[in-house]
Amino acid sequence: MVTDSKLIADRINTILTERDMTANRLATLSGLRQSSISTVMNQVTASPKMETVVKIAHGLGMSVTELLDFPPYNQRPDGSSAAKQRSKWEELGNALTPEEQERVRRILMGNDKGELK
Image (tube, rainbow, N blue to C red):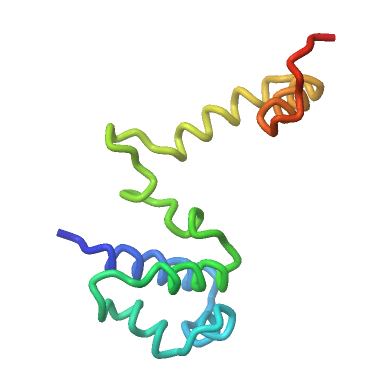
């Protein structure tokens, strides 16, 4: 069984490789000690503390949601993926006129009374 620690370490390593960034640079950007990054990357603990994950995500310029947006963390119990669902909604949104998109945005933000023009 793959542990949370391994999954998170692999994800961070992938992002660092894609960005040609070192763990030392990540430590600087996230405000963590190099030893804290090494602890996560070398899977010393069973699961990194949430506070550490938040700082790492912010050091990478992303939210925790973005950092953990990979299987199994982005999958629902029924096996569906939040990312797939999001892309379906984006497709639907792109089919709307700009006026319809603005109306939907206002409704979702709670700034629309529901009146039709």
